[in-house]
Image (cartoon, rainbow, N blue to C red):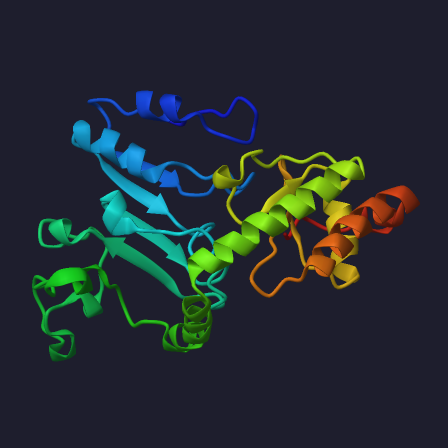
Length: 268
C-alpha cells in the first residue's frame, strides 16, 4: 500500500509507521522524495519494519552526495541509487547495497554470470553463487559508465557530504526566501533539516518556463504535479541561485514561456 501526502510535500512519519503491519514484507521508501525534496526518517522506518519482520529498501537517488547517508547506522536491509545525480558520475552506474547479515541468506531471483563463484569457468548447470555481495551481480558490468563515475565520487568524497550539506542548506534558504519575495509559490519543506538538496517552485506554465530557462543556459527540470526543481550543488554560486529565480519571475512577467507551450512531450 502507499501512504498519501496531505500537502503534496511531506509524508507524516506516524502514518508511514502505521502503514507497516504484520502483513508487510517489504517497505520501499525514498530517502528524499523527488517531488518536493522532503527527507524521510529512514532509521525510524527501519525500526518499525524490523519489529514486524519486514525488510526496507531505501532509494538514495535523490540524497546520496548532498544529504548524509549511513546505511549501517540505519540498519537498513537494502539501498539502491545511482551516480547520475548528486554524485556527479553520469548515467549507467547504479549500485545496490545489501546488509552483510543478509548476503548469505538470500538467493537472487534475477541473476547473471558475474554472480557465479567462478564466473570465468562458464560452467553449466545450477549457479553456485559467489560469496558476499558479489552474488547480487548480473551480467557484464558497464565498464565505461563505472569508470567515468569515479571522478564524481572522488570530488564529492574530497569535499565531504557534510560540508556540501551545510552549503546546500544555506543556499536553499536563500533561494526560497528570494522566490517568496518575488511572489513565487514554493513546494519544499519549511524546516531545513527536512529538505534534501532541491527546491521546488510551483509556477504557472511550469514546463514551458523550464524550456525557456534551459534555452537561456539555466539547467533545471520540471515534474508534473510538483513544479520546477532547482538543485544547487557544491559548485553553484549564490549569484547563480539569484539569477535562476529572477529569470523565472522575468519569464512569467514577459510571457517568454509562450513560444514553448506547443512543444512536444515532457522530457525533464
